[in-house]
Length: 356
Image (cartoon, rainbow, N blue to C red):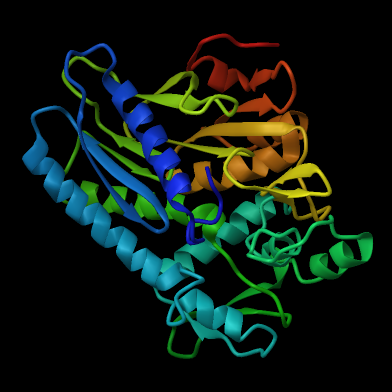
């Protein structure tokens, strides 16, 4: 799962995501002669897709319209690249003490992000932007890794606890950043949040039997056809383009997301650094190739996949014990890689081979 959903990506990045999405969605009905009907489009800097059982193409058009409208609403409110967005206003006012009024989407997404940061002890941090820029992931060009003084200075502007949520006299929710030069970026949770909003919108209109996928953040409703107990989703192999490690089957309402080191990276002084940064150390995470999470909601899966990537399997398992309904698979960045499933994930996973 790429983290920063509103960042601009190149055509190759979008094409890879489209291919991955197609693999995952077609895997849903591997035992039936005909695959589910699927519609794909580009939004939020990535590929979106919806699926429904074969033969229900007309209903799929309604699902696509509702999901597309929802995603567009959320992007207008939460994109850091849109000057009129709520998020841009919060960042522009950082350190001023002036709270920015929030709409429903911004209020909900910011609250979810703060909760995710607190639960993971800061391993997930929606204010990590200064560190991303320091390591060259925001367009800056550099050839050497940053030194300790640079990292320390950037870390001083990364603190999820400095996100302040208030209620204005008229009852409107508002948010502000306590320090100047801070930046709020909800990319690590916004895709999952958008999927949940589209899911809830469709369920409210009595739609059922559909799958929503936004940049690899997937949530299932019902089944892909008669006689099937759930949607079968491919878990991407981080070492083989378009390859799968195995499959998991999503029951009604469940979600899955993956964070990996294969989507974005920089090379500094001959060493490749992946874009997932540990906000606590200020450095890119080493030793992990991917983490896939099963969760009750797409927002939870989205944020938790980043959190568990940063924490690693040992510390991450302890967090899972405090997180009901969530399961994970860690894939180490070594040769050969190790696949480390939590007990709940192992019970659901149909792998090519689990290496221990």
